[in-house]
Length: 192
Length: 192
DNA sequence: TACTATACGGAACGTTCGCTCCGGTTAGCC
DNA sequence: GGCTAACCGGAGCGAACGTTCCGTATAGTA
Image (cartoon, rainbow over all chains, first blue to last red; front, side, top):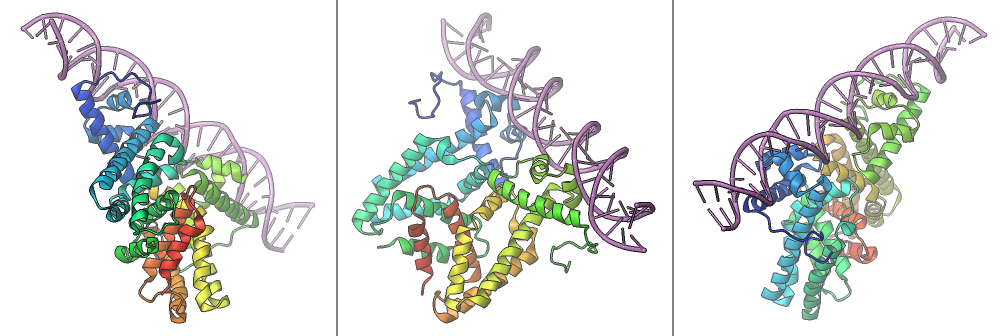
């Protein structure tokens, strides 16, 4: 329960080809599920990844296990990015850089999130400790920005997360709206 | 192509029990799909509506036809509400009343929209003329509000629609964020 | 190079689900 | 009340999909 992936197995190191295949499947599944929904068959994922169905099931014993692995992978990536921004950029800028990144590049993640939500799967309790890590990283960015005076002091981490989710939806289903103007409204609202 | 439901059939008037069953199925399907996703079997919808599967398929020849009918039904309801508000309330207030209604009560619709989006179904081109009717009604509210000076003049109908979609997502997946504060940010950004 | 544990591919199985079909029932009308 | 067309329920069919199994291939090692 204490290792990074949330599983307990004693981590036998994978063979080189196995590691390659696992990563390929994870990436392909992420893209396909986000773009076309969770209805895509495992056989199809396997085909596009250039492996057999058995290989997919060896790495991810169930289709839901594959969903989870994808989400965990994405969240870890986002947390790493947030930490890097916090360490690299000026406090006032790091927050908005992450905000922009989440709302633009994150539209693909939104596709996956919608697919999961549409299936009745709640992200929050699929991976509680990763949720916490994300909130911690975001909280750090937020606190720095509030201390620097670039974000109004009364908003909480939960508020910001919620706003980002909303902005992702705007980006993804925006239609012919002007993204700058729409996002501008929200960002303006966050200033003190 | 010119009748309200978007189908061409020469409108034979339904028998009383048929009309009852159709309405019941539509309502049950709306609630169930929005709450549990599109994966729920037709047999289950039929069971909860208290009819046989054959009855569902007589009214909606395909599962996708059922999706469409639900969406059309909802949009017609929203358009009617928008028109009523425009005729009833003060111009400056009608817009925000509709905005609130869409972002709070509309969370259920968001569940359905997510399910459809998660399945790769684009609402925009499922029902183009209803999309247009919605935009017209919303446009009327917006124009009145802008003329009354309660909404900044540079936002378009598409912008507002996008913002509402985002706010619905915030409501639905807000977690422990404070709804008033989060929505307040967006509404504040809409003021001149 | 030879040996073995590990991983691979894809055929096959059981289940689920969309959809059809038909014998029975009921609403609308005289 | 009796007649007919419209409608109903639910068993059953075929296809699709998640998952398993096993004979074959290959990475790692001496």
